[in-house]
Each structure stands twice: as C-alpha cells, then as structure tokens.
Image 1 (cartoon, rainbow, N blue to C red):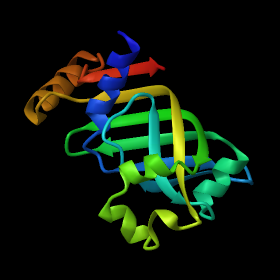
Image 2: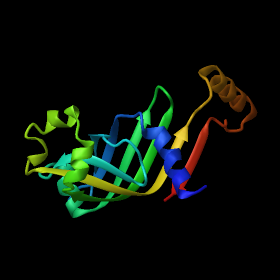
Image 3: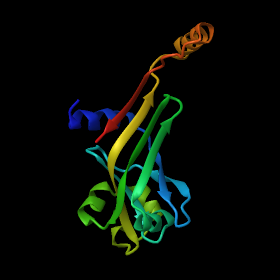
Image 4: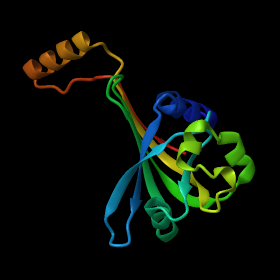
Length: 162
C-alpha cells in the first residue's frame, strides 16, 4: 500500500469523528488525555488542532513531543490510535484556512489572539480496529467462537507505519 493510500485508509476512518483524545506526557511522567476538536478537511500524515499556548496540553508538548491521538466511534465500531511527534506552531495561513465558528467560540479574539497556537502532530504510526459486520453477524461469530474455542474474526485490524 502506498503512503497516500495509507493516509486515505486512516482518514476515511477518522474524518467524521469530530473529537479526538490527545494524550501527552505530564511533567511527573504520567499520561493525560484531553479532548480536542478535529478541524482539518484531509489527512496527509499530519493532524492539526487549535490550542491556547498556556493550556496544559501545549505546556506538556513543549516538555515532551511524543503524543498519542485516539479516535473512537462506538456506534460504527471504529477505533483509531495514532502516535507521533507534536509541536506548537503559529502558522497564520493555516489558522485562517482551518478557522471556523466553532474555534471562535474558544478563541473570541480570533486569529489575532496572542495565546493562540496550533498543535501539529506528525503521525508515525496508526493502528485501527474497524468492525464492519452487522450486530447479528457479530453475535453469530462470537457464539461460534465460544463453542469452537477459536477467537472470532470481526472486521479489520491493521497497524500502519508512516
């Protein structure tokens, strides 16, 4: 699978999931996950989030750039875990391109807010679980597996290095 195909494969699973959990490493070494809003319209290996430079996730990224970004849609049974390196950027053209009324709700002073930054996550690895079978088929496969002693095969599980 080409790199562009890998990006498209991941994007089709996360593009309709509005919120991600961004996991950072805190100063005491513990991991903390916080909800972030997905604002981009496509994916080519980098995720973007608006943040306040003084916010806990931004401060954590300044101390340790390794992050995890996790998406889940229980209704559709799609779960995606991404890991990579993050950094803070003040990229005005990108901010303007990704700005929306939803972002303005968090940053009423707009793009000129001196505390506004973007969190850039360069994704190195993606792993996803995507159950595509209907509930009745899932139940049948699970019952069959319970009787046979073999694990059920439900949907697709893949790890992608980028």
